[in-house]
Image (cartoon, rainbow, N blue to C red; front, top):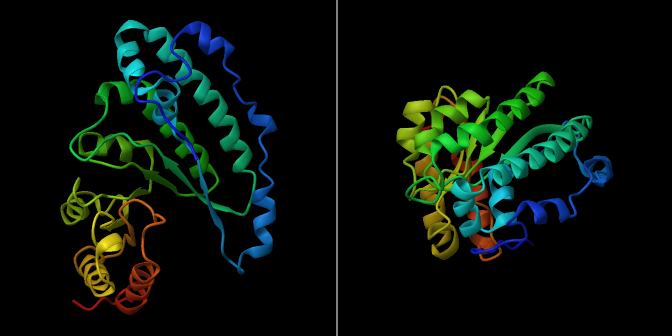
Length: 260
């Protein structure tokens, strides 16, 4: 569990940046990638969950402090991004050494339901170069990369594709129209998620879950490139019967050739 301050975080000055106990990427315990082998069925691999480039910077600073620092302390912003890059790049290279890894997911919430949290220019300067490098490292090993961001990321969708990502998650229904997204980028990105967590999965009935899954498969599934899933994650307040309804509906309606 993590917590991010809205106002002031743990780093608000260059002095605090220097004093912060930054982790050593070479000392991070990655033995779980070895241990998981004993539990995987033949042919199954794991998806490594890495990233939080933009998110790591603002959570260390606190959102208000981060926003002020964009204007008042650009050098602090640059140095924190550089350090995050340095740590994460070395962790990624270590993770990619495990042949049990079959893909890499990069989570980084860039937006809320209406708009980006920062300007596209900021992301292009500080964040997308890291994405391009990390996708290239995965691609060299024949592995796909998945990008996760909540919210409406439409203004930088082409940037995300250009970084080399193969799939996009979770496509919140209130933020983006997945049918329009499939029409626009379905030949370039696999789309993952979109089953509504705001109502259907959490407060709806199993029948409503089944109906929504069936509709997504009907409208987004043709031609491939769609993976059914929650529009964020499977939270603890998703009733088990609704989760199972989603899972069972995939097996029921998700077989090719798809029935209209």
